[in-house]
Length: 88
Image (cartoon, rainbow, N blue to C red):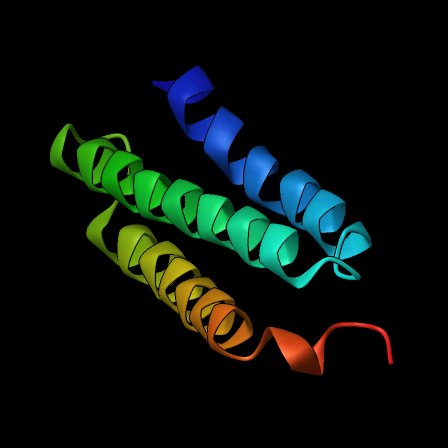
């Protein structure tokens, strides 16, 4: 379970940096953001499993899930408005 949680949690941040470097290409930027959004959703599933199997308390799960919900909202806003993040 640890490796399943570790991979998407690190991948979101690392790949977001990669996508941000490609922001001069709006379509590629949005594609990379969509990939990160999918990894964020995967992380939510693993958090649910960790809670359900007793690896994570309900309170800790709620706090972590709230953080990933916020990340999902930010990614969605970036996907909807990529021009705000592309170089002028």
